[in-house]
Length: 136
Image 1 (cartoon, one colour):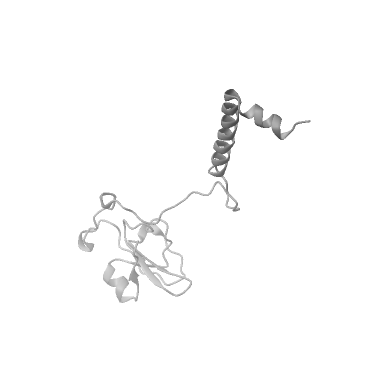
Image 2 (spheres, helix red, strand yellow):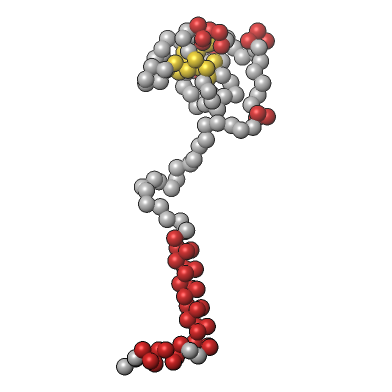
């Protein structure tokens, strides 16, 4: 049977102290490593890509051309809810489910992904129709 006195005399030896300290160090490093590892408790799928909706670099945003010198074909205003093609749409108008009207200009962060509900040739047309410029 192991008694307290046997453990005390065993621990007083130098090589045994080193073994105990090495073991304690190993356990602490393991626990810290385990705690900071890749632990997720949510149910988010791992194949979802993170997307940012803003840009920090002004160099990547193309300069807007004046409407008079635009080489894009003229866009026909569409009726809200009507199907439109993005090839003929210079400025895209979008109405959210809450009724908020936003327009998107070329070079904006959301311009390529927005499906237009109304198309405009100039920003003035969009403003006159009650649309506000998108902040992105």
